[in-house]
Image 1 (cartoon, rainbow, N blue to C red):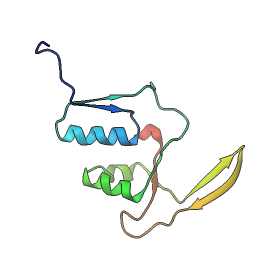
Image 2 (tube, rainbow, N blue to C red):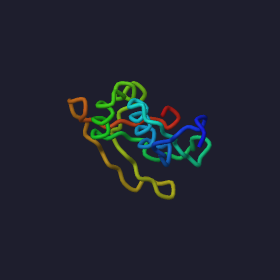
Image 3 (tube, one colour):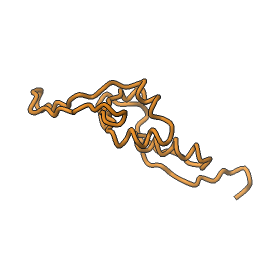
Length: 110
């Protein structure tokens, strides 16, 4: 291999929330990585768009929680829709501590 070829230390499968967070951590550690994502753009269908309190703890540790909070909305409940009708609803309690809340973010803002 000649010196013009770059080495990749880590390959990340998927540009979802976990893959992008891992990429951010690796970048801060100056690790060479690449993210492989089969989709060419964001879809209209939601995947893991909610941020749980444990996720907020991790994002805080790597310095991303404030930005995530500025670009998200409080998540108060999830509605479970089947055949166009709401079948169930799960309410989330919002606490007073920074990490005792759930947030939702549009995928196009990730």
